[in-house]
Length: 220
Image (cartoon, rainbow, N blue to C red; front, side):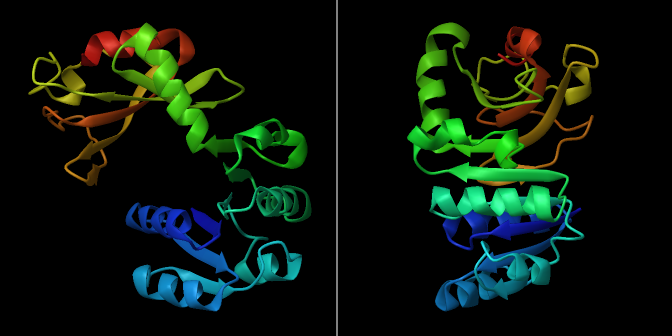
């Protein structure tokens, strides 16, 4: 996959690193000269375009015509929305993801504005608080496919019946759940069927909304 990350600050730099680690081709677009230079050192595998991501010429220079995904992760919501619109409607990018900085602007981040997926840190934290009462340790991080599919996180404790088991041995809902990633001691593990789970693992799973409780039952 070819991804363009617009905004080379801490969020953009980290995202670019993860995409490169996962084997994807990445270009970072960053307007500030010093930040662009920092990105070049921290993510040497990525291409760097120093320019304004709100400028269609700069997006074209970054390769937006060929991009599979554009992530608008600047610290300014108005810029992110412009980037999303240009990416979707000028360059026909298949997947457009955006960061939301001010939760009051969340209502703007929809498909009409060219946004396929929007992520708000404040929204995620509020969901954590809300769902403590309903799903215990399982947290919904993101909803996809118009709310029909969710990305959930669950931290395994020592008493979890999933600890010590291979993923293939877990009673996951057939064709309704996928273990997408495991965070272990600061390292991202791309899971396979024979990956053994350990206490303290943060398990990220994709599932249908109706099967969230089944995921909790299988992992907790």
